[in-house]
Image (tube, rainbow, N blue to C red; front, side, top):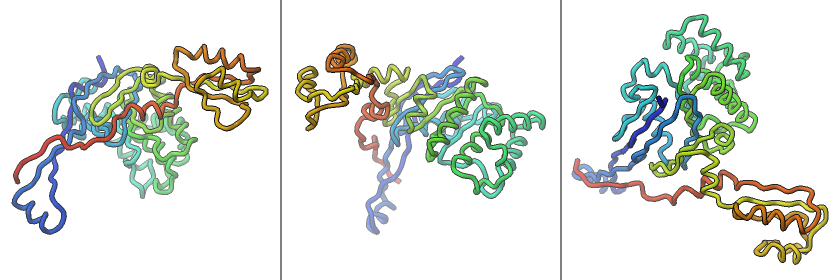
Length: 339
């Protein structure tokens, strides 16, 4: 049975719009213009137990709204969600014991007390046995390298240290499903790498199902074999990251570094359409080539001279994802109404 199932999941918000100034305020007392915006529009997918899935989309695409519906923080306007056999919106205690949500821009820890105090509160909330709690806390603290910080005020920790503590607090009850919303936002490169290593180990050793949103493509590339792409509330893609790259980027980047410079005229003759700039001689040549022509382009480069380095790379994932998203449009989809 799938761990997470969304079926035509939708969320619509209603709001009022008024003209600015005193005149607009008075007019709104007698007549309100009611509008609707669809944050999530008929999204369907299923995630098997033990999968790590990336959830991609621009700001405002509906990622966080979807996560909140799957956690039970928001009620769907339409469709249904099932997580571990539970309906999230019911907020059953048996369900909440089996999941965790970590949001990179929200704090679950209290700033003025050490993280251990919050962990002890979670121990009581989840009814964890003392031995189990100590064993789990010690194990996670060792993996995250924060054991020496458990009794330090949270406000005195660095951003990376706080993020690790947030993960520890979310996992102390061994959730089967972990929802992560931008867990590495604001972290430096070293801290991001350590968090990614921890999540990979968590999934490998405990089989934790992870649904991850992130604007850092390194997170997605290193953790998520499968991705969901959402834009303006619609699910645009569901499949392997490699398939998405191949479908959205029909070209590869072929680069060659030569032992001796190649005359620009010779390079242009061998590679029609090459943008060689103003240089008379080229020591390095890089160009995009259709996937089916990569071998032919590489062969032409080899004929130009002795090559000391030859590489064939995919286009940067950031560019691929950015190219998928449609231009932003007015999110308002319905209107009318009286107060």
